[in-house]
Amino acid sequence: MLLTQKILVEGSRMLALYCARQLDLEHGHPDEAGRKAAGRRSALLIPIVKAFFTDMGQEVASLGVQVYGGHGFISE
Image (tube, rainbow, N blue to C red):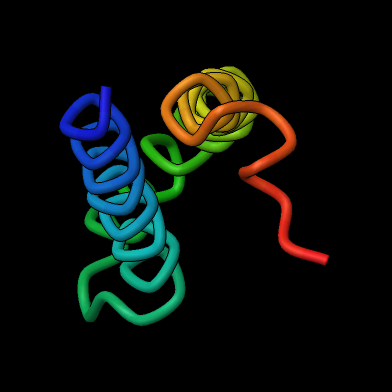
């Protein structure tokens, strides 16, 4: 379960970095065609990233509660 959490978090970070790179290219690519292509990719990726992060955040939190034993997961 811990490895599953690690993989989901690292995969999500890579997807976020790729999406951020496309947004940067949309605004800073020297070629007009490159800017348009990056804009199309980022427009496609943003809703996917938001939905995926929501689902995987719930999954990682659920796994964390299972691994660390419910109330023991919360430090007071």
